[in-house]
Length: 285
Image (cartoon, rainbow, N blue to C red):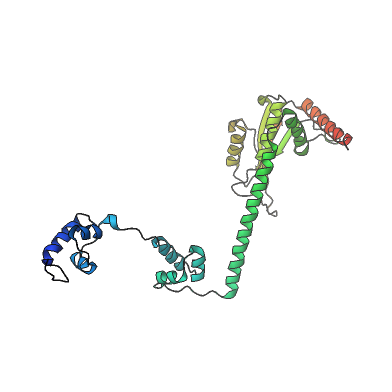
């Protein structure tokens, strides 16, 4: 070839070939090797105005970082904070966000409060995770429970939370009242262990009149797996406007009252079992 246009004859003909190859999807390297054009300046002129094919464009690894840096800058973060967040250099951050407005400088007191709040939030998260691990490990220690263990647990549970007979108020009735759904489940399992037929078990909700009574009734009916229509009439507690109650909101569902019909004999046995436990524990001292 005769040297013109920087070293090649028939430049326009060569350009037409280069453009045609480019539009077929060839890369610069492939066009260079096909046309034997090893001068980058000439190759640039031949391909001037022709975009590269999609397959040759590689995503910039820093595009996501740049977008995130701009997002954080718009939220008011300093270069130092963005660097800590993204792990990239401050010089890169400066190039990426230099067209954005500078955040308003916070006074030292506010910055100190924000830093203290962040440290405290982190500490609370660490404590919550420590509590979660401790509780999970403790729960795993229980394992399977024998019938005797459930029997003894149920006696203690009833004596702590159930109604009891008093010399001045004879109440030989088996009535258990609680708001803890776990206790309710354990108590019902205990009644099953004792052979108490479910048709002898009566349910009733006790709740403040200002609460969502219908929702509470449905919740407890679902927990004990009975139709809400089988519940006895709900007991409504009168609201005292002078009292500031904390048991409010969607999670407040009152208490479930569980009564065993014709339970006088069962009550006497429960009381006897309890004093048997007390005596056994005393003898082991």
